Amino acid sequence: MQKQYLTEENYQRINKKFKTISLTVFIIGLIIGLGLIVFGVVKTNEINRTNEERAAAAVAESEASVATAKEKLSEIEAELSGLEAQYDAKASECDSLDMADDDWFAKSGKCQREEMALQTKIAELQSSQFQIKNADYTVYYQEDDLFVSYILYGAGGFIILASAGIALAIWLITKRRALLAYHAQSVMPVAKEGIDEITPTVANSAGNIADSVAEGIARGIKKGKE
Image (cartoon, rainbow, N blue to C red):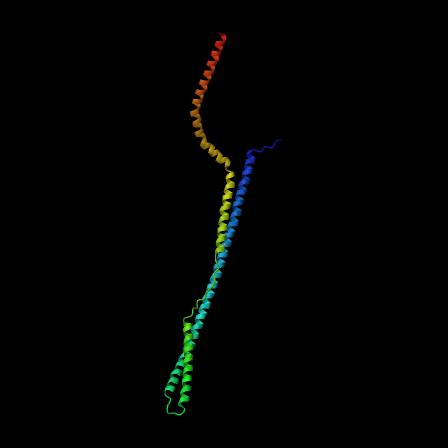
């Protein structure tokens, strides 16, 4: 038995296959694209959470450093207060030494050395106080970049658009007959009008040709009789 390929049943069956393929391509692309986008969202949340944790740790470390500095400043101020009192007392002691004493020179030298030692300690504490007050207690940290997330978003969106385009192209194959029918229906009235306009001219031309041929034949017959 001869197999018939061009049947309506086969046509509908093939169309159904194309529609299934189109839908499958779109669904697979949609799943992959959405999967990448969702993974990008998860990655973004993870990066943001890590950056927030680093920022919180940096703030806590900075606050701890500031608290330690304040505590140290309080200790220095208390020590400075005591040393300055000692220095003032020692300076008064040195100034009150009686130059008439036989050991004045020795006592004056010792007193001045002690005074200088107190002055040196005060200067060191004041230097430390200045450094602590003017130190930078900002804690810097490295933030993770969201570049990977942007790549995932772009790839997911591209896959969805590409799969939609491919699916649409496959689906349009199933509509070729309808498109051709629409094209034919849109062209036929114009073609019919052209044919209607051309037909009288063609008919007249054909009639003229036929008359000429008939006249020629008649003349030939007449000459043959003569």
